[in-house]
Image 1 (tube, rainbow, N blue to C red):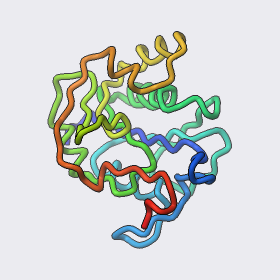
Image 2 (cartoon, helix red, strand yellow; image 1 turned 30 degrees about the vertical axis):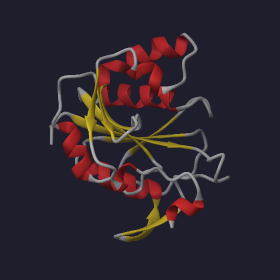
Image 3 (cartoon, rainbow, N blue to C red; image 1 turned 120 degrees about the horizontal axis):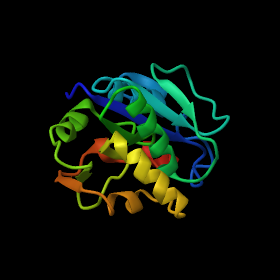
Image 4 (cartoon, helix red, strand yellow; image 1 turned 135 degrees about the vertical axis):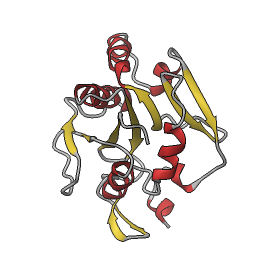
Length: 187
């Protein structure tokens, strides 16, 4: 584990497909039932310090062993939230941060370790046939680039990774990278 790796968990808000907040949906994992945000924060906290959770305005979350920061505006996508998390991580002294979506309740410290071994690019993403933008290691100084992209009207993570030095790490499919979009995905 790199000593400067912070963690950023994007908790978002309600899922359009699920009709409810994914972060507080219970997941019956190896440690028993807990909310998805609790599982993801536990996995990220095992390898990253400090950990920031970026939540929607007014989003109710359980008590977490992380600093909760609120988005200023609801529903503008993950790019703005990623910028906020990277800025907080930089202010805490971290040069890099693992950025993860809350809807990956099977995230593992081992996956974070695998990505953390690679240090030569602005962004390190896992690739298993597709990019996993919200399970990657980002340089914290990318917050300024994100501000520029947002000012230009961009909202997608692809807009960022396509304009900076991005390294993709080829991996086999793994449950750690599965995101939960429907209640059936939890089964």
